Length: 206
Image (cartoon, rainbow, N blue to C red; front, side, top):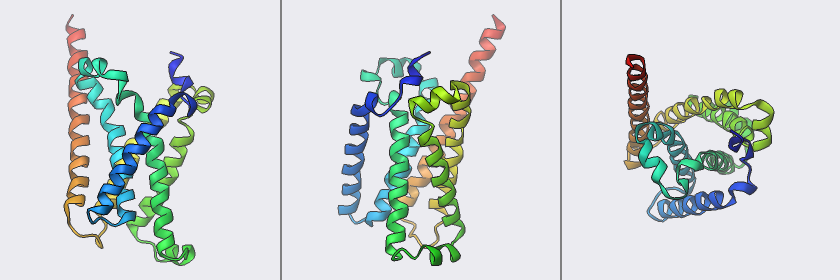
């Protein structure tokens, strides 16, 4: 029961390093294969959030597999994935502002619906990142932290709405990849929910 309260940067430095190195390599691959750098950073942020959200359902659906995986990877990396999602999301926002020569006031007055969604996502991502450190979890209590963590799904669907609703982006493989990830999260959540109900009904029968 004490394990969740010990989650801080020092205890998970190896996991942070793994997530950071792999993410940066994938960003470079996207960039050198023709994707705009800012868009590559945004894509990596979305992919990390996607990984964060599929871990829970997968652990419910294929629990024996998750228990047998080496080093508890990637099941124990949710916090690190979420933190790096926030880092890349903020980095993407800064790149967008830099492309507008830091005309933040002019950018805000001409803000589109997708842009407003992005700012809401970054706000909640920052909140959840702060709430991911051990001392904050200990202060809030594990029940309150789990309740707060449910906002991750809201962040994911808002982020999906942001990337899909961008009319100025081409309907290329990256947008189809976003759509695929959104559908996959919905399917995994549904299957995990059905399995949870089925297991509960089995215990009731007994």
